[in-house]
Image 1 (tube, one colour):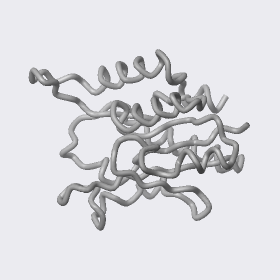
Image 2 (cartoon, helix red, strand yellow; image 1 turned 135 degrees about the vertical axis):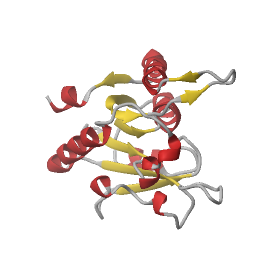
Image 3 (cartoon, one colour; image 1 turned 120 degrees about the vertical axis):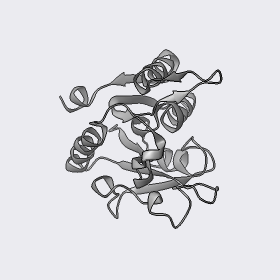
Length: 179
């Protein structure tokens, strides 16, 4: 079975400066390469969009930040799921949509690695899907821990992927998938 490309939260709000410094500045270009490949093969593509329940959030309904980044926007025949929490499976019909179509393999890309990407990949693995996370087609931001230490986005990204590689997903690259 062909894998579905699962693109998580590639919305305009992710470009907001207030989110801070990030890693993988080439992530959007890598996602675009994968998206073009999937579309060229007529393989399934799923877009996930975060809709905040917090007024004032760049992801609150009606805000420009809710909209998909133009280069990665869904085509009319591509599935779109909206979520209010990090995991794309929680309170959505994503699992049912995949199962009805016989899709058992997911290639996960997007943002934020240690939040929505990790939560979705963990759940997918727990639900029995074969999951690959594309390390150079995902990114995160610098993160302050509870003691006040700021962890560089590169370290947060690496640890999140290491967590996923333990039990939930295979970690791969754009080049490996396109080869």
